[in-house]
Image (cartoon, rainbow, N blue to C red; front, side, top):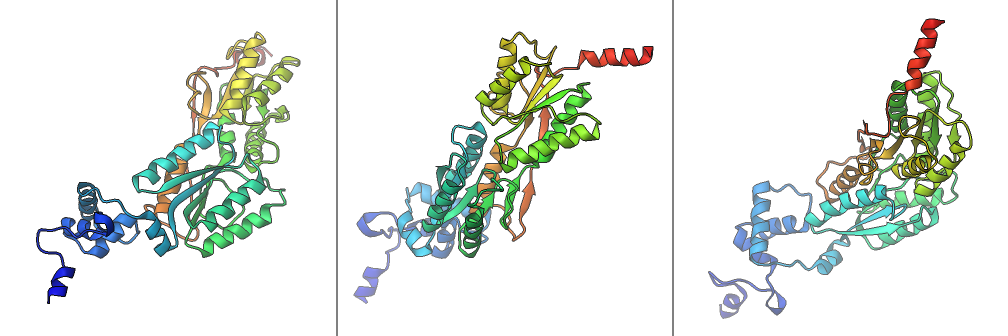
Length: 365
């Protein structure tokens, strides 16, 4: 019996793991739950446990300064508490907000967030996808759009299929042509609603500064602009090649200054709108009296520029993706969510005074 007494903890004493560290059994005993329940709570498993019980286990772990052995857990589960966020451009505030949304949720549940910057290269995107699968990441968030004509797309689809057969949870944050859970915005509706808003302000000659050439997000936003103009019976041909940065916006505005100015300008991103705005102002154009300017994103600098913009729920995209990966959101094979966007009117747009003159001319005629 002596051997048995040595193996069992005496009442009022803590069982210690190797090296005297607090063991999960200590946490279970203090919380008054089974070892299995404590394990489910501390591992973040989706197994149903009452919230009051979860809180009791977490409090016990905090009181005992319990530190789970993540490496051992990963070896047993063949899964790491890692979420990989594959983004197009780490300097773009659009992706920064998404990454912050993921990281905030991941940190609360003891998940590590890894940011993978692709510079919008499909080959680099696939390489990071492969690495994250090989490292048994708990989740992979693909945050950027695709290039529909890229030869790497077939390899991407194969990686998506491989992820679906593994324990790794994959979620895409744009409307990509793959069978994967998606949380996104309707990029066509984004520009349609923004264009309709400017048309409602009396603007008729509206210019559009394109996004990055060939990118699916850019293509859909361009289609939305064209549809809104067509439904109003307006010419949608006043379009300028651009991108999502300040410099493409500046280049587009420089071309505008050499020709007849438009009534209004929509840029495919806030950054490009900043380039348009500052260049037109430097050229002596009064904003918004002569030209209204609007962007897309509502990034952190939009308020500083007093920029009218279409607010995208970038932070929420990342946060919801992380919750789905961790198991705090429901999942299904056809899981898909489209988050709402809305126009944020500010000082760079106003009623088009020439619209009043057109009305007077029509009445006079």
